View (cartoon, rainbow, N blue to C red):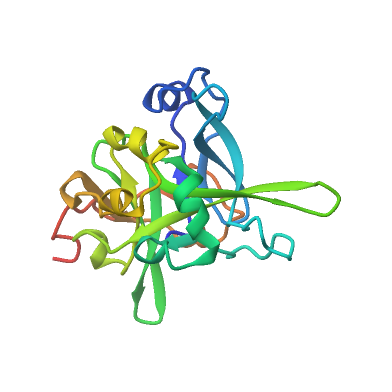
Length: 234
């Protein structure tokens, strides 16, 4: 799964990467956690332009009879079963989004403890998770817009740490993923694959990231040497 991630890249760079009309104002985040408001890129239904908005991390389907729940409520969706799950099926066809990030954390079991690792691009560049969104409305009209991050089988680098990884889309696939006319699951499925391991790196970080109250640059400080494909524990 993907339960924590980072986004400390400037709004100018994010605006350029996602072709946003306006430069977003984004606070640097080093330990983004479930139930928090996260930046998401969607298409404006009227103008067709890409906009960046804040959504609650943890999908609440529009048809849900319950109000938004706990921190871990549907923060991830398995890409292999999107068409089988009522919570994700409609959003997969009609409500897709991109979630900007520049790193994500996974925990590896080491004896009786779990060691967190930060995984990111070798050049430190920002990227996009494939996401879905939905809008839930209370009887009084109060609405909550929320999102989930898609996951897939890991590449060779992440597999040494965890058995799943978030779906990361290259820039050339931003358009097809956001295209409102692209509703055929068979055409979307090829996009939901593991990002190339050779373009990524990972390194252990402090267990401070296990507490979502800790959100500062010390969360991403390496506690060991960066690793590339195939040499994480060699």
